[in-house]
Length: 143
Image 1: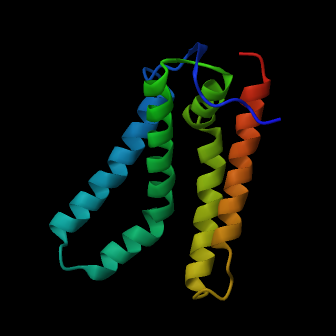
Image 2 (image 1 turned 120 degrees about the vertical axis):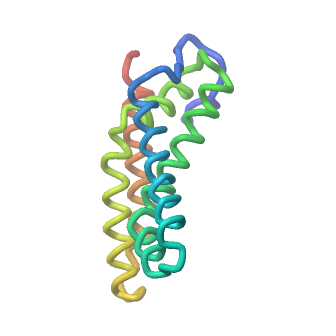
Image 3 (image 1 turned 60 degrees about the horizontal axis):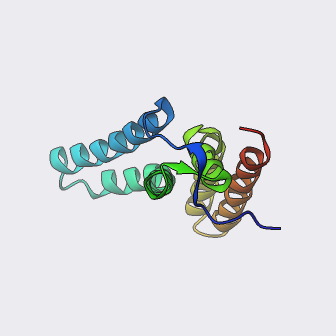
C-alpha cells in the first residue's frame, strides 16, 4: 500500500534547521564557485568542463533536494507523515551523504570510459532506492 500524498498534518516542517541551512549554503557555494570561475577565467573552456564534470551531480542533487524541501514545507508547514518523511529524508542529510558519492563515481566512470561502462543510469536507480529506503525509515518510525 502506497503512502498517502503529502498534505496537512501534525508534523512541523520548519526551514529553521541546521540541515536546511547546510543544504542552502552548500548549493550557494557551488553556485559561487561557478560564478567566480566564469568571471575570473571566462575563456577557460576546460575549467568550466572540469567544474561541470566534478560538480554536475552534486548540483543536481542539491537543487532537487532544495526544491523538494521547499515545496513540501511551503505547501503544508505542518504536514502529514508522508510530508514529514520526504522532508526528513533530505534535511537529515543521510540520503545525500550516500547518494551523491555513488552517482558521482558512476558518472565519472562512465565519462572516463567514454560510455563503455554505462554506470550512470544504474547509479541513479540505486540513489532512488536509497531515497525510498530512507523515506521508508522516516515514514515507518514514530516521530
